[in-house]
Length: 162
Image (tube, rainbow, N blue to C red; front, side, top):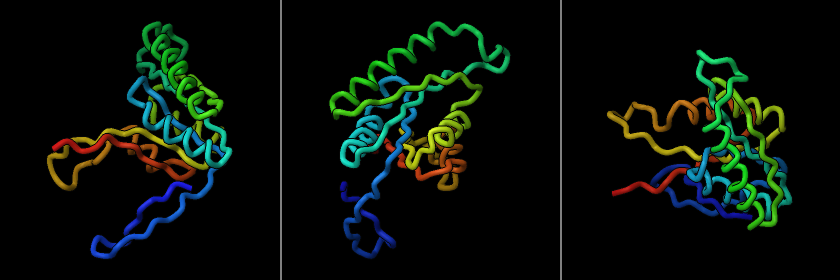
């Protein structure tokens, strides 16, 4: 198991807690930015014998029909599929990749989590620069997934730059 540090209160010391075993992991992908999330999902899957499903959402603008041709986006989705499967191969994991067409990525990710009965979503979400302490930490897609997911969500972010 991967030890995770969890602190109940900033002043109290934290002890490593084992991460629960998950059997079905969903990881949204969007090009090379998602490689860290895919690697974490594959590492968890390799340790616990879990299945990994990656979902690439091709967002279709509202003014176009859902079946509209989007050659650039579809080509990017195919590249993401190959990269995701290559990361899975490094961990000895077969990654099932689904390419989904939708108006918005957030609801599509939640629908895929429900459809695959995912027990964990490993989501890459860059931190937003906040103007105030009350501003959103993540963008719309991550916020939607965190609010509506039918399972636990592990957020993977890039380290803070100083």
